[in-house]
Length: 328
Image 1 (cartoon, rainbow, N blue to C red):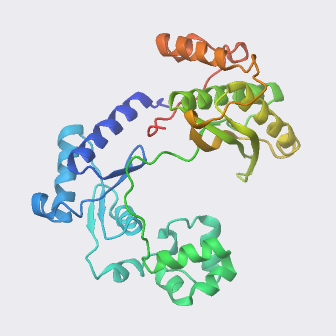
Image 2: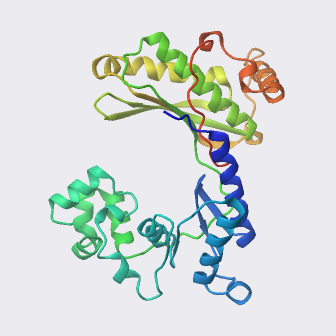
Image 3: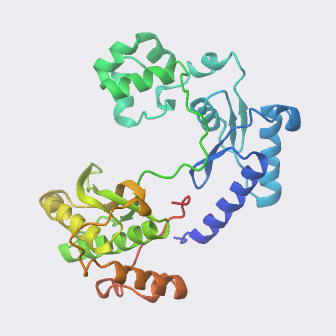
């Protein structure tokens, strides 16, 4: 097995996004290798959207040395669908006025948010194409899938997507996860994994000047089913110890399921994020909040590297892969 070079992925992502920003200032990143670009106002200076897309692919190939696939459409949803259909290394333009003719023959799995479970529900009722979903009406979809999912799929099946490309939008949660394989794990091993993930997440939050109130624990079991648990804290924080203690409580309540079904992945996240400057200090002031320790540890790692300082429980353990991602 060849180990991935995450630093190379991160460098390539930054280079590709620079090409995006040189094309238009309206860039909304949704992952390290995917983004929406609004080029609607560039016709007079850069040509048609199809011209811009072709030039974008050429520029990424020339400057970064990578092939990219581009979908062009009036809505974000349909541009993403077109990109998926055109893969690998393609360009697909959905003509204005021809959106539904392109969309409706596609399988239901092309609808944003339709995974294996939802696809099975739809196919069991004979709904195999997007057009079939569009024809049965919103009320039937709501009764079949629930209010939120039914309305969402009804809108997408008719290419109703009013969302605009948003720049400068910050993520709603910050998280990390670790795949464990299928070997049984002891409680101390799981606690060590949890410590490493929380250290990573809390440091990212402080670096981005974010605080959060809701901590989340995500688990995947040996049978590939998943479970999630969450807890809302009394006030927003980026303190490592506070977040870790809350997640340890969630892990303890999940241990009977883990003992019964095994665990192959542990993920943690902090949501309900806010700017750290917006946090109101609480009385009475706690002199042992852990903030000074977090600040000192962050300073050492910033200067000497992430591995310069670690918890004793993590010594000699594989920290797992650190995935590259968009800025927090």
